[in-house]
Image 1 (cartoon, one colour):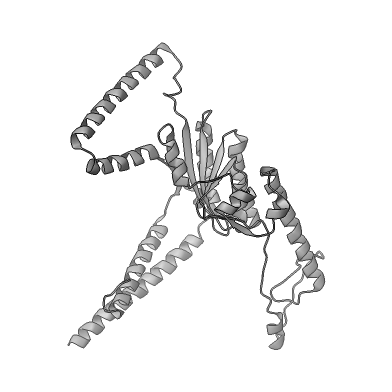
Image 2 (image 1 turned 90 degrees about the horizontal axis):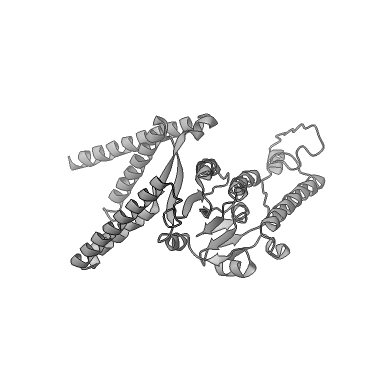
Amino acid sequence: MEFIYEYGLFLAQAITLVAAVLILVASLVSIGQRQRADQHEGHIEIRDLNEKYKHISDTVRDVIDDPEVLKLERKNARKDEKAKSKSTRKKLKKGDTATADEHRKRLYVMNFDGDIRASATENLREEISAILPQVRPGDEVLVNLESPGGLVHSYGLAASQLQRIKSAGVPLVVAVDKVAASGGYMMACVADRIIAAPFAVLGSIGVLAQLPNFHRLLKKHDIDFELLTAGEYKRTLTMFGENTDRGREKFVEELEETHDLFKGFVSANRPSLDISKVATGEVWYGQNALSEGLVDELQTSDAFIQSRLADWDVFDVRFVHKKNWQEKLGLAAEGTLERSFLKIWQRGQGGNTY
């Protein structure tokens, strides 16, 4: 009986697992078939980081500070805030201009997590469009950038989105905590100032293209492949046809032209760089990147934000896509699938986890 019980339990888990996989596959197919226009549906979320860190600070102080001292400090702070608010209202009634303290500078924080297609560009576009009309003189924008690079045209567009901030006369800071390489550095170099963590990876100012060729395999099995083009260089290298030296030469020539455009773009945005030295495709860690002029300062994004909290209003800006029922179902199925795998694995390990 115990064997039948164990087998039934395993069978139920297996059925759940299969069902979860089917639901996940169906949802992913559905998401892939959505129209591009639907990807723009969503909304902007603004989070007050001053309030966030104040709440964290209050929570810590509730534990470590003397309760009476803390109570007195908060009482005095409320009195000061009330007096300040009253003074501001009086000035506004008289038509006086608000002081610099009453109109504090703002720091808008955005995040870019790049994949090979720079898919986050759509979010970045919406976020920039949302904040630019609200920017006042003295405000700044911080972009937390993480990307190993990807498609040239995709990252070219992403860099152009950041250029909109510069063109509007708004100081732009890019923070690299982990990696900004190749297309990622193409974006970063647009900034007025680049800060990086000591072991962040930067550079890779180069162009890469690679593809397999199955011509000999097809020829071995007597399979013909025909590629018909109009234009001598419509297709230089192929995956299935026989590649020629002339085609390879043309392909390399195109790579060099793209590399020259990349170098020219970086030089235009950071003219102090010795482009011939850094545009070799190599990468540098933060400290060495600072020595080469690829970054302006060693500092994490967290440190930069916290340095502004006392005197600036700091806002985290995010564009959030509207999830349809297929996406919500996919996320639920993904969670179910993960839990099912974990349970089955734990049973195989005697309940141990690592």
